[in-house]
Image (cartoon, rainbow, N blue to C red; front, side, top):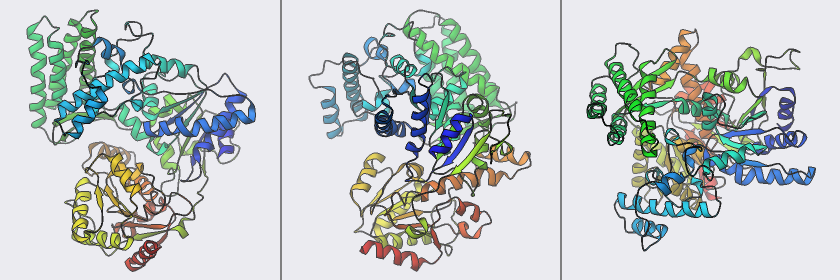
Length: 638
């Protein structure tokens, strides 16, 4: 892997590297990156990973170890920095100049918040105490020349953090804010500009691409870790939402600063108008230019434009209100003018009602033109081959099959040539794991998990003595399985996502080997539990996207229109990626053993089953339940 990446850096090519769990892929790209920076000290390498948690792991563990090792060899120390989005840092203007809760409590904020939580105080009181604690922390960070990074803050909720941070749109800017010289965000960006190795995340990489490469410091080489997540994260960064509550909230914020009462009332009433029109249309994609939703969006856009024009002032509060109105204007305008390359749809949440979402049909063009055309890039993950091939992963980021190099390649390059490499895995999956497909069960239903599947889950967990990670297609299925297994297996501890914070549930799952944990998507990719704690992974059904999900529907339709197979290119590829990730939870180190049980017979019986199975680790496979049960009982006895 290191040799392939070094070659790509030297030749200015792109390379896709599948590196299985346990290969040490972070060192596989850090070694050539540090070697390159040692030879070219005036250049910069950016590493982008999927989540802030993975970013922190790299920055706090892998990179310091690699830099220290490189320094021992070369005698030169490479400088490194972490760069996150603005909302991950506390805003000094909001905390020190803004209005909010009184800080002169007799108890410190940390103590007060802990006591309120212990007393199970109402949510508003707890949030208030958390804000006090956060403000005290921000002042301490400023005094100690700290980073003001959310990861270092006292325990808090999202609602509390919103009181000490500021959305990108509402930032006054370093030149207009009196705290510009000591701003945590500006200092983090300055540190990044002075560093040779910069660690960021996919979302910030996407924002950089969408805003003309003005967010990240200039760099000569790029590494994208967890690259299987890239298109999803970029799509998320390029998507926008607009809800009636948002329009109403922004209107109320602007109300105090508008001298034109009619305009203020008009803007406020448009929240109700949007709510009404959303109730009258189906929960689906909006394609018609004559949709009543577009008419209301036009009115919101026009009112927001007039509000922004009316809010001209040097007062920071007025500027921030104007910025919030400008965001409403921009989103309403984009939604009203949605083209064939955008997907606009109506969505619904149980607690907050209906709202609008707009997302790009695909992000391959953006990544090709704004990222890959500019910088030689390494894309790496444990799951890049879908159906045994790299083509789907390459296409998703804008690379074409005709541009793939298999030898030395042509003398004239376009800058978009790419190579692919599967470095394999240190694990012997066929000896360490069994894939059990329960092909006797009925096909899964849309209205909930079947009684037969519930009985199968209980028997498998009984055989394993707990030690089970249950990966479910929906929260409803996870909760139904938890209820059933708690009743059938009263001696077993069954945790279910939603019982407590996911971090707490995961900690208990790791610390208590005979405990089982059931959950949904965040567990499919986010849990690393080696050893006897996880000897059985249950997957209740093939994780296809919901058939009524507008973005996936639109993408499948676009593939079909261009002559391809929309189901295989979109739905099956999505399911294959999640199956690879989910089944990969079982074997995390060289001495792990266990069973992956898929309770969906279509994995064996459907025509697309072989494509999905080829994306999963190469376990020994069976459809005999007694074989799986016996293997689990032997493991439990050991």
